[in-house]
Image 1: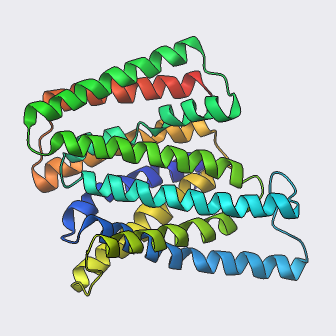
Image 2: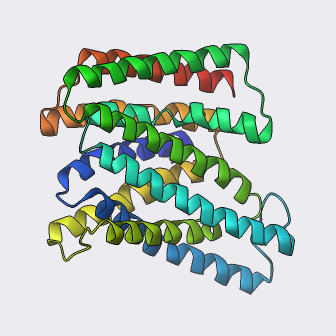
Image 3: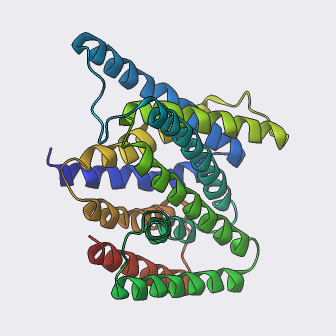
Length: 297
């Protein structure tokens, strides 16, 4: 397949994430924990294959910067921190879907490229153009409009929107830390640390919250496995693969199709009609992120 076709397939699979979460009757922390648990199992064969290959060829996996003992230890600690932020992302975002619409939740969590740009400016000194800064302001305005629509609807929508935005902040931190870690660890070694750490922390959080980890009906376990296999492995992992062949701008702009597809699926499956504030605010956010990604390429 062409890389851009693979990216498009990944966008479709990730769009089903919100739908599968809505279909589950399990608590949010349980969904997140099992998703990362199944994902950890699915990445294990990839790590074993890499370690076997490297042992046979007697060489370490290729990384951007050769690692010393100290840098490797720092990378491992970074991977652990990355897993913690990933756990927080899933906890916040999945919980948000119990309080706000699929459209609002997916749009707000997709705003993470803007947050990544801000964090990259603070930590790496990466330049943001004036036009990029203006587009950030436009995205913020769209977020305010979308949040105002949540207050107009009432109920738990404002809380859900806040949780979705918190999820975007957590995944942005996950991405920024991952950029540093990936200079010293291969993707399989990185995920083999980050994913299990995320799983363990989510299990601890569920137990601390007094949430039962099971047993659940077979239907629930199938949903958990589908989230891991399709939305994570055949969604986000395809993006990681495609980065070797296409620019990050292509990935960032393509992901903007996720909330659109998710909103249409929610309309068809759940009869969930987005409000005008959601449509307007979401359109502003997505357009701003699209133009921002092109500006910062």
